[in-house]
Length: 125
Image (cartoon, rainbow, N blue to C red):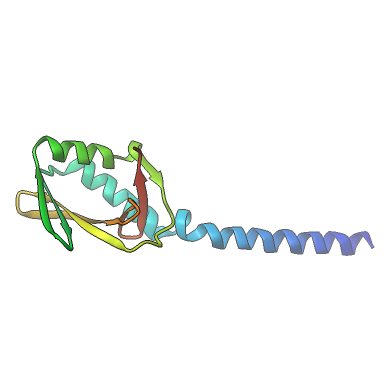
């Protein structure tokens, strides 16, 4: 009897563990998320970005100077909050440029969430 209860408890724990693993895999442990997060960190840390173009349905806005510095500071690792819910449609796209060379492209959702490849995040307000 005790052996049967132990087996049932192990099966239940395994099922719960598997469900938790599948639920969290996409947002936290997926290799693409880690790779894209590291790539974004590297671009923001090592590249000289002097122009940001924000592209939306209404047109393209170009950000330069001090405003670029403020935007890049808000995108730094210490100012990000994990966001694994990307249910809203991208409303804008931001191109980070060094002169005329595109360093990377980010999507900005209508709910304020950013996405770089498979990595989604929000910025602290």
